[in-house]
Image (cartoon, rainbow, N blue to C red; front, side):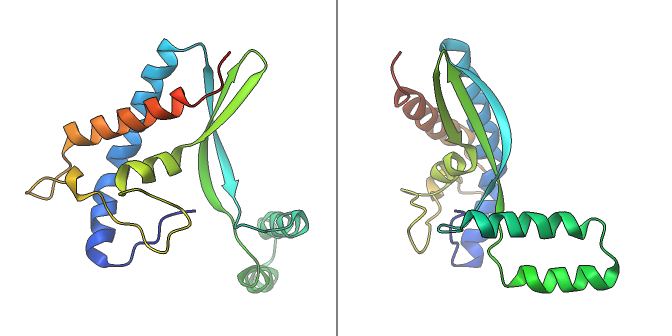
Length: 162
């Protein structure tokens, strides 16, 4: 789940950090893949709210597909129905494979861990890691890269052994 940001300053700081964090995470993953026996492929995924049933997921998916060919009146009805249903948000995963082993890394969650202090998706509010922003309000690239590298290395170290 995306972090809950509680004020406009934190929101601006998150906007400053997210794209650079994503770039550093992807670059550090590439370096890890070059040195490991794992192969990786990137995939767009849909992240559903917890406890969403398969029936509801199928209904929402069907309604979203119906929107593509609906008349304006039908589209309005579909939109009204969708407002009462749980909606997925887009995710981006790295699927890793080595022989018969598989693992998945949620790239947005990894970026949130870089940008926020002790990020936990169950927490009510997330706190920006302000040490990643210098006194001029710019990204501190060295600190950002060091944190991204450390988190990516930890994730790869936690993968199953061969």
